[in-house]
Length: 118
Ligand code: FES
Image 1 (tube, rainbow, N blue to C red):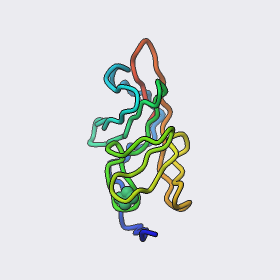
Image 2: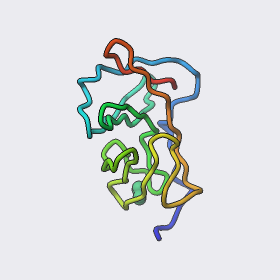
Image 3: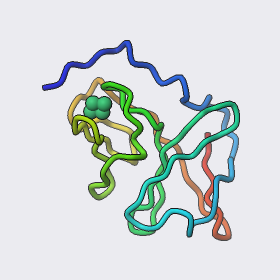
């Protein structure tokens, strides 16, 4: 098992404000793909289209900081590209390490626009 160094912190995690942020059109992220979403102030999220359902999580693997938007989709989970940790996209739960949870964010689709509750 890889070591878990809690020194890795996500400084690009958006602050929880409850704001609804429009990030793009549904056609911008094809099914089976992930994308990096850059927000105001330098914050980042990873956005995924899983068979037409959209998910958003923080764009940061707590193991060593890899961008999860570049990971491999496995159904409704993403596998980190660097060392293989997997995260449930609905809950942010790490499937390898229960102590390595990430933040997940509600995604709404309105008239073809992707909106995320941060
Ligand atoms: S950085 Fe190691 S599993 Fe993600």
